[in-house]
Every structure is written in C-alpha cells, then in structure tokens.
Image (cartoon, rainbow, N blue to C red; front, side, top):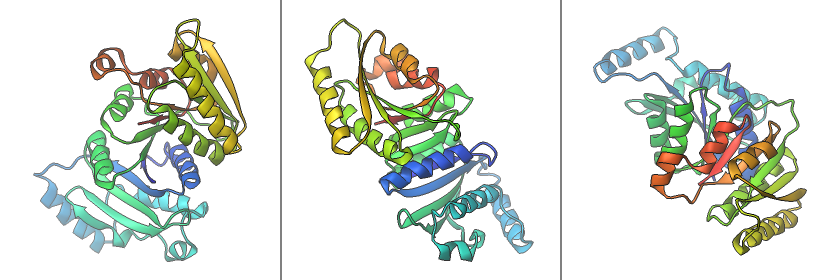
Length: 294
C-alpha cells in the first residue's frame, strides 16, 4: 500500500498528518508527504533557480522547505522514522529536483522502508493528481478545506481513494461508521474499515439503508459478509438496518463523533455530475472525517 498525505500550513495540517500516519501504520503503508506551494510561471523559472542557488549560498531556505522540516520533526517525535535518520537531522541540502516544479527527499521509515517528503509548485489539484499518477498511490489524505470546490474536485479527479480529515478532534472519542450496500466497492470499504478501526482501537457501526420498506437480497448478503469480516478480524461491531434517504440517515447516525468509511457510488457519471455522488453529499453534510474508497 502507498499513501500520499497532502499538507498545507503548519498551523492547520497537524491533524491531517497525525490521522494519516496513524492509519498508514495500520496498513504498514509506504508514505509520501507532499506540500504544494504557489505556482511558478515558466517566465520566472530561470530567475527562481538563480534565486535558489543564491539562497543555498547564503544558507536561506527555498519556500516550502519549512513545512517539510516541520513534517520531518513530527515524524521524528512520533518514531515514524529511524533513529539514524533522526540523528542526521532534516536533510534540506539533499532535496533532489526531479523536474521543474518538483523536488523530493527520501527518509528511512519505521512502519515501512519508504517515507518521502515532496515539494511541488503549482495548482494543488493538478499537482496532487500528477503525484498520484506518478507514484501509483492507493490513498490520498487531505485536510478538510473550507473551499467546497477543492474537496469536490479532489474526489472527482484524483484516481486514488481519498480520506478527508474534516474537523478531527484528537481529544474526542470516535466510532467508525461503514455504510453497507450491494455496490461493487462495499467489500473494499469494509476491509479499509477494519484497518481504520484497528488504527484507532474503536468500535464499528455497520449501517445498511434502504429507500423502501424492505431490504433486498443484495443488501442482506452484503451486510452478512461485512459482519463476517468484522468477526474474523476480532473487531467490535454492531449492525443497523434503517429505512429512508441514505445521505440523511448516514448524517444522522454519524453525528460529529464518527469516522466514515464508504465506497464510491454506482450512479452513472452523468447523474453524478448533475446530482452529486452519495459519498460527496455525505462529505458535504457531515462534520467528521470520511474515507471514500474507490
């Protein structure tokens, strides 16, 4: 497994990094932490490179390096990188320029061999989409942006599963809510739910919602398979069967004290465009973290 954790300012990204690393640990995943800075125009690139060379000569840091150094210190304080790596200190002088708007540095991790720090410049959606394609990431982790369109675009245009760390409070006791239906991505969402439950040591609520007054065979079988998976993995769980609008029921059940893990909708692309997918509607209406499994 490969996780990409996108961080912004040091002030607002600690919960994103904390949650991302905690879940990555349960997957024993290779982790890349990426910061996307402002776009540099082609006209300005020669001047920026010259400025960077002079900054190195004068021992100044290039923009964004301070965020990577903050991430390095977080990894060190929480033992996510080896003691040898920690003793060597933040390797700002070994950042490798891999193309015009991207540079990286490799660290030796403890939960997996690979922990990478990436610095990019440009439009955040485009840069993260390119990084996901380049690295073949399974999960991308982002903070809960105040900009509705940004989260919407991330879900729509990035190919990996996406965890939005929305209004996470480390002092709060969370449960895990896994909506279960007969869609193709539900089995994978249940597997991811197991890992997240193990990461936080929390109970799982399996929720099956029907718009009509009965549950079809596909829904019942999906719920049974989910329960079987939880029992096999030793996860405390409870199943709930409710009638009504799925988005409303999920919102009411989750409240503000659950982490939600759900698969992508089976709705056709045209309907998704005009009406919005179920996971997107849940994300927009719930003040809690949500992992959308693709």
